[in-house]
Length: 345
Ligand code: AMP
Ligand code: MN
Ligand code: MN
Ligand code: MN
Image (cartoon, rainbow, N blue to C red):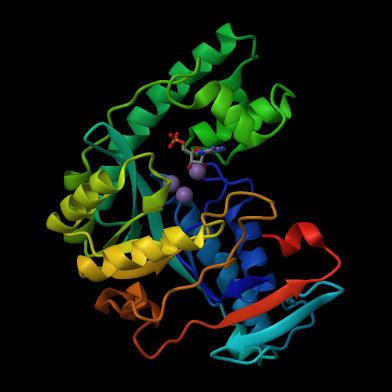
């Protein structure tokens, strides 16, 4: 069984390490029945405007009942819809409109750990957001070139140049871009393996980076009037005690929400994050962290927000995007019968 949510506050395009252009991500969001999608590329807001333009174009087609209006395709032959929370399976074109929420996932350092913070409902023109981007742009490029040099010593040809050529002009090049390149060069059996064998801490092409501090980043996000969300808190390789310290530090400098639900997440992890949200009085966000075609992480997939928590779209800043406490998450529960790979997702 899998679920598809109409709200997803974390994904990537080829403005960073996603495989698809902002337009393609938006088309996929319509095909999967989303109503609210945050584009949250690493350290860059350049993909947002393109996504918003594409959403506007497709919303107009829907409103005009145009034959080229987007179709929903997530119900495959043999799949079965079990139930739909807060809505119906069939929707009018008006009920299928998509709002793109501007966001970015900023890289930060906290006590020697690389921690990601999603700035949701941001203003890309705000000076403080521009400053955060400008700082990362310099560091990212230096680091990407250093990683590239190490990969060259290991026999790869022009890794930096090839990653840049595959991504959008000016894109943030992350270890995710390199992991895909290594896999596509046939030097690893999967992207995950490429990451683990070459790029993670301790491996040959690893480059240590000191990002801007968590505290400064969160303060800037909040001052710019955006919402600061601690991204995928269970994915950091830290103890529970250290995670609590991180959550406290995050809250102390103005952090608003934890990303409680993500695709490919164990129930225990979601339960633990639910507990932390309650203990530290934080709101709850949800995001697939979609990067590319794959079974286990996709737009809206398996984003189940516990009903005891306050969803982050209740935050007053979300009003600017027609969100608020009156909006309930629509969740389609579905089984992909006859497709066991998808079934186990
Ligand atoms: P960076 O921000 O440059 O350190 O790269 C982090 C990015 O690498 C993440 O956003 C993911 O896209 C990707 N990544 C992290 N862990 C893995 C993994 N185990 N396998 C493949 N890609 C990963
Ligand atoms: Mn990434
Ligand atoms: Mn991340
Ligand atoms: Mn991400």
